[in-house]
Every structure is written in structure tokens, then in C-alpha cells.
Length: 158
Image (cartoon, rainbow, N blue to C red; front, side, top):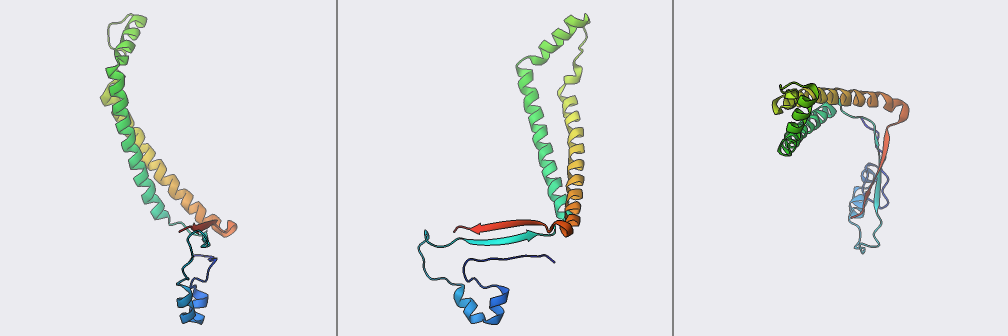
């Protein structure tokens, strides 16, 4: 299922030494009291050889929905700040002076239109993020046979 290499600096029980002598492995699992500053750090080397595409798709979807929510809130806050500062009125007066018309040339800057545009862009972002993340997970699983996967070294400092 997965290729896991485990290197332990101390005599922790592993599959190999536990089945040879379970009592010795049990005894070695409880190390003697050593001061924390002199106790060696345990390191474990792992090879990531499979990523579940469905889990990646679910995680990417949740991340995309979260980003979409942040974009919606940021749009409302930014529009409110610009409206309170009078930026839209200044743009409208500049547009009417430049074009000579009295109509509102910047009606596309209304909050409803901007939120609608943000919702459309957020929907596209959610779909693209989910599909591309799943595709990359599948490509990673296919390339593991050639590359051997990603090697991780985890250290327990406690």
C-alpha cells in the first residue's frame, strides 16, 4: 500500500524487533529517565507514495469556498470604504465633465453589480481550484513510480 522507511535513534519497538522478542521491545519502549536537554531527538523518514484524489478534491473545494467568502467580504468592505470616501461621486462627476453628458456613466460600479461579478469569478475559481488540484494529485500518483515520491523527515523534539 505505501512504502514507509522508519529510522529511530533509540530502541523504540518496530515491526522487526517486536515480533522477534516482544518483551525486549516492550522494555525498550520505556526509556530510562534522561534529562530533557540531553535526550536525543527521534527522527522518522517517510516516503509519500500516494495521495487520495478524492480527499484532495474535497480539501480544494473547501479552500475554494473559503476564498470565495473572503472575496465577497473584501468586496463589500472595499466598496463601502470607497463609497464613504466619495470616490464614486468623484468618478461620476469626472465622467460627466469629460463626456458632457448628465447621465450616470459609472452605474456599473454599483454594489449589486460588483457582488454579482465577484460571485461569478468565485464560482469559476472554486471549479478551477478543485479540478486542477485533483488533476495534480492524479499526476503525482502517476509520477511516483518514476520519482519514488517525496521524502519527509519528521523530528520529535519533545
